[in-house]
Image 1 (tube, helix red, strand yellow):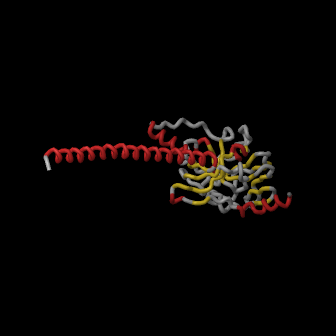
Image 2 (cartoon, rainbow, N blue to C red):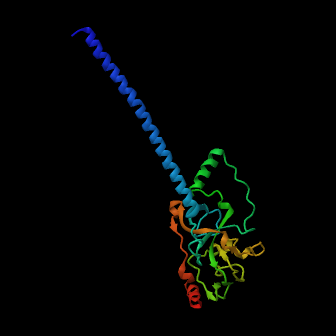
Image 3 (tube, rainbow, N blue to C red):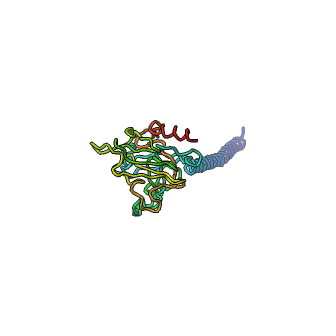
Amino acid sequence: MTDDVLASRSDRRVSESKNSRSRKAPSKKRSVLLFSRDLLIIFVVALLISFLIKTFLIRSFYIPSGSMENTLQIDDRIIVNQLEPELIPITRGDVIVFKDPGGWLLPQADIVQNPIVAGADWLLSVVGLSAPDSNDHLIKRVIGLPGDHVVCCNVLGQMSVNDIPLDESAYVLLPAGETKVSGIDFDVTIPAESLWMMGDNRYNSKDSRFNGETVGKGYVPIENVVGRALVVSWPLAHWAWLDDYPNVFREVEQADKGAE
């Protein structure tokens, strides 16, 4: 076998090796591009789904004050069901997040954040995991529905709805030695499309009782309701489903059905 033949075969092997590497390089590059494309699509779809869930189903809020203690603690994170009241009717006892009807909240100073924190907060808010507008909302418990006659307090210190006294001991926080569920007496009839809202920490809650001089006279328009708080999601030590205590309002509900 001549040197020319050996050289020819060697050249072919080198050439074939180069061709193989040249074919693999574009193939590997194409695989990386396809993977990156699929990853981007998955991210966009996940972001879109999260945005839709946040917009129409649920979202997160944090608790900025102690007005709902001991049901909710300051800085608790809650998950809110936004289907209420659009698809699910509001009931007495529900813990509701609502927009300020006007004059309930004091003016808030703008929160200054560095661009990285602000960007992360915005991204989390898009998917419903952060709530930078929590300070523009309030959270209280529904006591009176449209048309209800709410009065406080009877000789036992109880509040009544439509002449039926309520035992609110399951959730109301009162100062030591205090038996009246409200420090002030009141007698109101709830207007149409409005709610009477009260905090569980009755002696430390600026709720419907204390907003009679505002534009809404202390009543909360149903259109201002963002949704019903379902669960405390953070911190994990506080994790709990939020009860609407149907037994407290059972007799009132039964009287409603009897009047229909």
